[in-house]
Amino acid sequence: MPDYTHRRAVHESAIDGFGTVRVLPLDPERDAPAVHGWVSEERAVFWGMTGVDRRGITEIYAHMETLNTHHAYLVVKDHTPVALFQTYEPEADRVGDCYEVRPGDIGVHLLVAPAGPGGVRPGWGTALMSVLMGFALVTLDRRRIVVDPDTRNAKALARMVRCGFTPGPVVVLPEVDLPEVYLPEKRAQLAFLERESVFPGGPHALGGEGTVPGR
Image (spheres, rainbow, N blue to C red):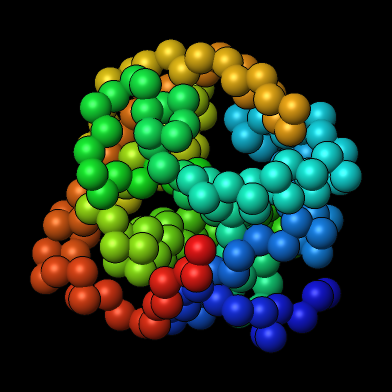
């Protein structure tokens, strides 16, 4: 397994009974094998990359690395990669045409890695999401998270509810056809999470350590 200990983390948090979670900027070359394995599974069909080969994954995320509006991260728990996390500026994304974007909004996408030999992990995704909400709302100093899961993605919709998101409108996101990636039209359930609802004590109420990415 690759050694992640020497890679720069943009956010780190320890949760009692869960472990230490580090958020690393995605390396398109080094992380392509893990990401390709995750997105190729049928369970990841809503991620939209099931037919993309490893080289294509590298090219997609190498292109994203050149953008100031979209960022990808590898989430590592106790030295094991466990999720792919992406953030984006809603006004620079197709979702921005479907709702009234506020200053301080940030869009996110989360793909959790398969459970592996241990099987089902009750509460695991929610614990992981709590760390990532801290990263988006506190480390990145944003006021509100927006998510846009496919209305057919029952697992993502259930996680959204467990994490305290407030459902918004159901919208149809138009298709996007770029040289690096094709995103088909999607019927999406928008949902929002205000920073004050998660950290009522203010943005410094988060435990653990965080650093702002140098982007």
